[in-house]
Length: 399
Image 1 (cartoon, rainbow, N blue to C red):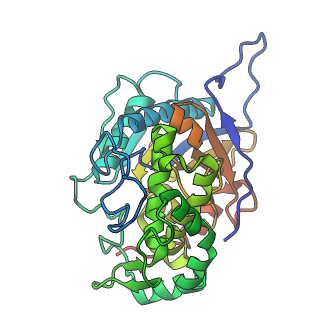
Image 2: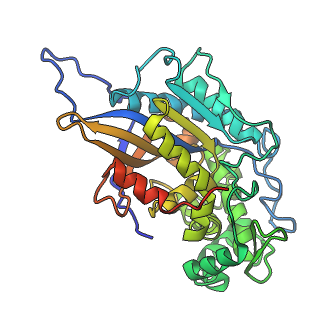
């Protein structure tokens, strides 16, 4: 997969929407007509089992203020902040008014059916349009939404044997994947403070689930990926430095350890076969929304959703402060349908929008928008017909 160069626009609190001059503003070269945001939910407490049973540490883990998997108050506020910054960004591009309640049908927010994604959708709506009654569409809590969890929903003709063969080709095999991350695993052991082998692993292997509609990963990457993510969550949650990896890891170390979390996606979402099936419905939703959807369609999901769609587009996710393809809380793929005002031609522009670990930790407003060059498009602006052909050709058929 091709690595997209990081040419990012960093926006802070002082981002100006319009200038105050005596002359009329120049006609923009491009106007955004529609946009889709595919987001990861906000900062949350660790999931059940994210730190595997039997993980050894020198001292106990810090406690969280909310139940496992739930978005924290700090995470909710971070979503409100980035939602407000998103609105400024999109208003400056002509998509929406910078303030007030969006007109009927202009904004749609849909979330997966987990509590953390539903809560994140509500938090985002509150920050994007304060005081407005913005409903968040979702299925009942605990049910399977095929758009966000197509494998669980059996939404495609997924073949576990074909998936495993492609994963082996893409990664070089589970042993090779583990060996490539030996340095990060050793660094994680140092942070945990138990000596070595702090996270139980066993032989590395990937196998098909009993029903044939999913895969199971075993071995060191499976366990260490979750532990690395928990350490990052401690940092962005704003826990005291002494409680972030027991004071034994800084932001640079967390970025290095993030490669362990990203390695999980090297198995579950980034191989072409996995991407085609994991992004099958979300990719179609993006295409439909860019063609005839609301002005802004926000899809609140998980890091697996973001990485799968990025992989379907054959782009890597590179941004400030994180390992490549390790999507932070609130991180998003942004799709814009833009029109060139001079010629009237329509294009799709894809970007990766994030906040740095420091911004999330401090409650800051700065965000990074990194353009992505989709292979087959010839540049950052992809003609609509070309984008539709490229993406649709990389998605598995839906039953």
